[in-house]
Image (cartoon, rainbow, N blue to C red):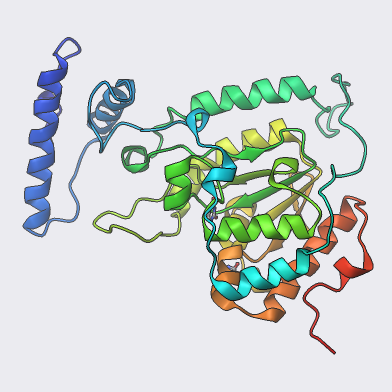
Amino acid sequence: MDSTALPSQNAGMAGYRELLDATISHLEGLQESGERLIEVDRLTLAGLMTKAVRLKPGADKAPVLAPKTTPGERQPAAAAVPRSLPSGAAARWNRAVAGSGPANRIPGPAVSSSVTPGPAGAPAPKRDPAAKEAAMNDLRRRAAECIRCPHLASSRRSVVVGVGDVNARLLFVGEAPGADEDRQGEPFVGAAGELLTRILVAMNLSRDQVFIANVLKCRPDTPGQSHGNRKPTPGEMATCLPWLQEQIEILQPEVMVALGATAVEGLLGRPMSITRLRGQWQDHRGIPLMPTYHPAYLLRSQSPADKRRVWEDMLAVMERLAMPISERQRGFFLPKP
Ligand code: URA
Ligand code: URA
C-alpha cells in the first residue's frame, strides 16, 4: 500500500470513504486471489488507524476501522449475561451455591481514606478510593483509543478494560475478550463468564465485589472466520501488558487469581504448565497470585476432579483474604461418599 494514497487532512469525509472503499475492495481482490499477507509500513498503518479513531461513532460508516463502543457505553451486566449454559457445569455450580446466602463485602481492613507515605522499597501506599476511581476512569479513556495493535484496533468493537470495584481486595485476570465480551464491552459475560460468576457466588462474592480484567483488552482477531477465538500471541500480550500493569498499580489488590495458562503466561512473563502451577501461590510484583484453570477449560473438561481443584484454589484465596468459610463450602465438589 502506498502512503501517498492517504487522504490529506482537509479531504472531505466522502473522499475518505471513497478511498477506504477502494482500499477494501483492492484487499478483497488480493484475498480472493489467495493472498494472505500484505506489507504495510508502520507509518501508513499508524496514519490509517489515527484517522479511523478520530471518526465520530455513527458520523460515518467505516465498520472495519472505527471502534463502535467504548467501555463507558457498555450495557448493564445483568442484561449482558446469557441465560443458557452447557448443562452439567451450570447444574453443579448451582447445586453448590444453593443456600450459600447473600453476598457480603469481603471482610477485612478497609482501604485507608488517605495516602500514607511508605518507606522507599515498601509496597506502594494505599490510594484514596475516589482517586482510584478517577485513575481507572482516566485509564479507560486512554485505553479506548489505543492503537498499539493496529490489527486488533481495526477489528474490535470494544476495548474491554475491566469491571468491578476499584477498591476490591481480589483481582481476577483472564486471557482476552471473546466475541460476547467484544460486543458488550465487559469481560467474562459469555458462557465462561457465567461460570466465573457462579464460582464467585460460591465464594459468597458477587461480580461487583471483585475486579475482573484480562491480559488482552481487545479481542484477538480471527480474519476470515465468522466465529471462534484464538489465543493472544506473545507479541500482543507484551504490547498490551502495560495496561494491566497500570490497572494493578491502581487497584493494589491484596490477592490476584490468574485464570488459565495464558493469563499466567501474561502475568509471569513466560509460558508455564498450568496443570503443574495451579494451586501454588506465585508472586507478581509483591502481590500473591493464585494460578487456576480457566472456566472455559472447566466447561470443556466437565471433570468433577478439575472443578474440585479450582474450588480448592478458591478456598486458598479465601483463606489468604481471611474470609469466613463454612463447612458446607469446604465440601463443595468432593466426591459423594
Ligand atoms: N475468557 C477470558 O479469558 N476473558 C474473558 O473476558 C472472556 C472469556
Ligand atoms: N489447560 C489450559 O490451557 N488452561 C486451563 O485452564 C487448564 C488446562
